Length: 408
Image 1 (cartoon, rainbow, N blue to C red):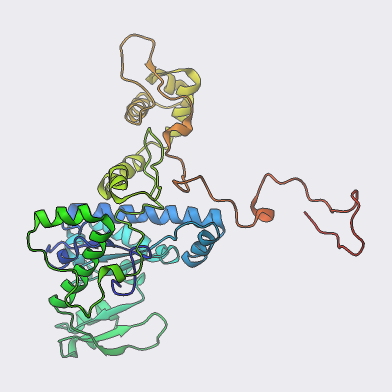
Image 2 (image 1 turned 135 degrees about the vertical axis):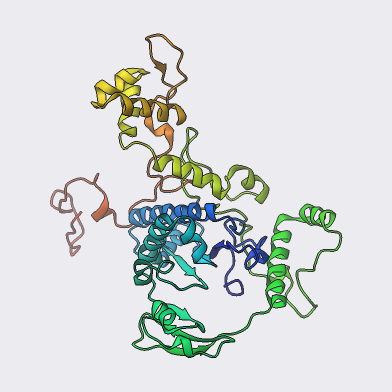
């Protein structure tokens, strides 16, 4: 993937609970975040991926596109950057299932079921193919499977539903189950040494350094007086000869995941890497804010509208307007204060001050794009609800002879 795709076309999310298998990829521009090594954060990364999948489906719905290729074609017609593929790699599934089995299973199944059409793909691996790690629900949503040498027929059946992997020879000998094949295929996997991995990683780090400019190179030299060169010999391609990457260094600079808050959506302009790094929050900040919104009461929007119309906010007001009990109204007031809708409690009977005048100032609606609002529908005749009633052009207007009448 790193050899054939630039950061404009591909972004990676890597989860490595063992901390030693994928850490060598830290620093390449393809990563949405550094390699996740903490198990408690891994579930949050999968949660973010589900929200990004839902956001992409909203984008596709507005553009009338069924998959990523059609949507990117729509963006090219508007002279906008393409939406990249996302590949999520989990090195050891067993650790995640031990830490948060219900949440991990739910997110992985949703991604496996729906994420392919929006350009998001999953690769999960485990050394312990037991039924409590690879559950029936997870296995049913992964039609493509690879089994290396295992110790028993039971493990082979867990992975492939048939025996056979217990008789493999090891050293890359594997069985591959394709989603469109009727039988297994035996293949020889290739061995990728650390030197080869380090070479391509150094190459992409060199590209990233050149995109940052000479000052970044000077800073890198001061931190590491003898850095490894990004290419190994004069015969290799230098980073300056690489395909253009657009300088993307942060997740979704052109299409950021919606991060709601009192200040509205974040900007997604294509400026320098340094300026974008200061405006685009980290992946884990986005996860925390998305979790906060996901935990809001289902009457939150109605509560916002109620306090704006009343010009003040209080528990008793929400009890009357929304017909809820004291406990729920109190939680809604706390959520409104946290979202920046209401001010702090000043005491007395006047209630809390309302800090916004329009619910749109929250910025937590279904935002389609952070650049210039939602794209227009792909087919205005079918999709627009504001068109006038259809009429035949030419009945009341003079038209050239032979020109057919058309519906509009």
